[in-house]
Length: 300
Ligand SMILES: Cc1cc2nc3c(=O)[nH]c(=O)nc-3n(C[C@H](O)[C@H](O)[C@H](O)COP(=O)(O)OP(=O)(O)OC[C@H]3O[C@@H](n4cnc5c(N)ncnc54)[C@H](O)[C@@H]3O)c2cc1C
Ligand code: SF4
Image (cartoon, rainbow, N blue to C red; front, side, top):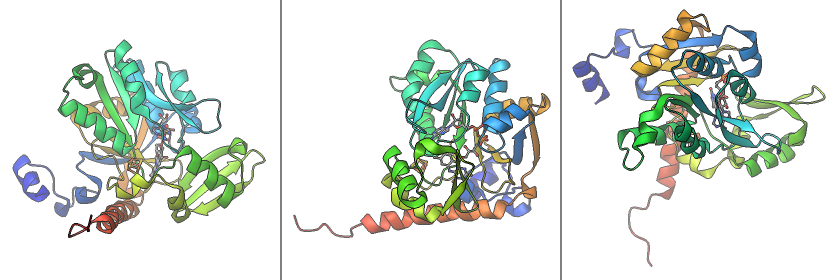
């Protein structure tokens, strides 16, 4: 079906060697790159290459958006708190991944209530929800009209705050308040504590603490986003970026032209690993569905 659509719409086919990543696994896209922020302040504050924060800052400064829905933290250590950022300082404050659920869409109403043009950063499920609102804006036309940039984060699974706390206590023997940095790379969930110690656990251990709904999720790379950003398949300190829509392409190109972002060919990273993880996620969701599927009604 995708092959047929690509023929009709004239999109490039991976088999002719022009598509770097299989759209069957990562969704449709116009361009796939490695990217990072050129300014050190974004790379330092950001989780990987600081691409998301630098792109948002550029969009803000160039007037593409007036505000961005992002996730900061409050008084509890590492507890994500959705917020509406209207300055580069606020974007930097919210940079970095918080590995538990941040209900970012709860801040969308506030954002569109006071601003005509907003960006939203979210996990693939949140990005899809906004795309559905845009496509069928029954009763929420103001929301649909005002979202001008939808940035999706790659996401293999997410944890509840309770799950994250338990994971730290049981598997890593660390208290959340002592954690300076968290990261998921090379199949490991790693934390760096305030005394400079680095402790890791295999990502397969995360699954026991993850949100159960994530087991049914097929989307690793935020297929409904304008621009999707992750680290799987990128060298350290870089991001993989998939540009999917015209408006995403315009803003990214503008950031590259302004030398806010540095980009390289995605082939210089490890696209095969990204494809493998995307495929694993689809298969995992398929198994989860099979496990709850019942061919015949059970007796009452
Ligand atoms: C729960 C979770 C799971 C992830 N899993 C993977 C994965 O399996 N593979 C992979 O390649 N990448 C994954 N990522 C994405 C990765 O951690 C980076 O966010 C991404 O590479 C962008 O890097 P950056 O340096 O450009 O981000 P930054 O410039 O630091 O920007 C990150 C943005 O994300 C927002 N944010 C932070 N935490 C959350 C949250 N919980 N929910 C919504 N928004 C948030 C921040 O406010 C900020 O705007 C995950 C991210 C999260 C939050
Ligand atoms: S794994 Fe899927 S359902 Fe879970 S947070 Fe990520 S995008 Fe949402």
